Length: 165
Image 1: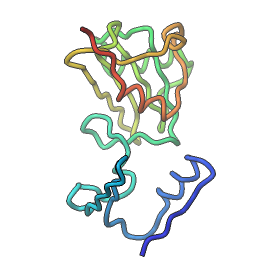
Image 2: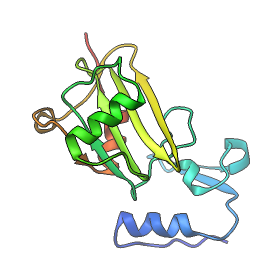
Image 3: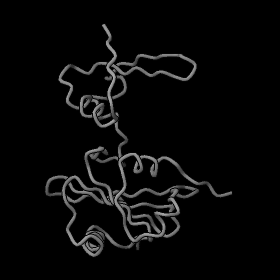
């Protein structure tokens, strides 16, 4: 039995999906031509709806629309570790890295990203590097020292790349 729910906003849809108490057993993929595939969640290694969110690296962190995301587009010294990047967060925002906040530091060429966040009392730093190309920053983002970005913008930043010829 299948029922289709409609929601007034993406936020409402995600809140309902994440609070669903029924057993999660399959994923339905629907493609442009109308072709549909139903795949068991166990064969995909998915245990909950949250596992469908874009993972950052191989860590346990999953991006969420309920976190706060901060972008530092002016280029980061990639010799800095967790302590150095925490210092950058304090310098720009005036406060420490909090739980449910994620800080994204591209290098000057925008071919690499450092992603700093906290889970409980553990600070985590993930690194990404493109083999070729660069992460695409908007013109207005490049002009600022740091800015808060949306969950959608984070996903766009991590998936849309500019390739060099």
